[in-house]
Amino acid sequence: MAEKKVENKIVAGAGVYDILVRPVISEKSAKLSESNGVVFEVAKDATKADVARAMQVIYGVKPTKVNIVVTKGKVKSFRGRSSGKQRDVKKAYVSLPADAKLDMAVAAQSK
Image (tube, rainbow, N blue to C red; front, side, top):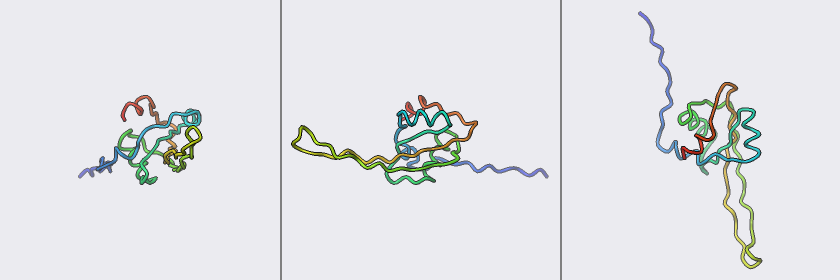
């Protein structure tokens, strides 16, 4: 008898679309895209494994590496009287395989 090969499909679970908030468009992210890297703003409670799973489910690309950085919000003053704080941002720097193609225009429109 011929053996059937079973593929492990990653199924979109509850909240997988809430992990990747939006792509970050900056000079640094544009430079990273030349070497198959993308940058996403992610949810505050997202882990590296969550980001990798979301990339595989949403874009069909399995990342080779995921790094996460939390940028603390700056304190700003408004006309010298009152001060406020910008929000904290959690970003994921995702490295993709050499043969993977990810269109950031499509990524920006999906949100």
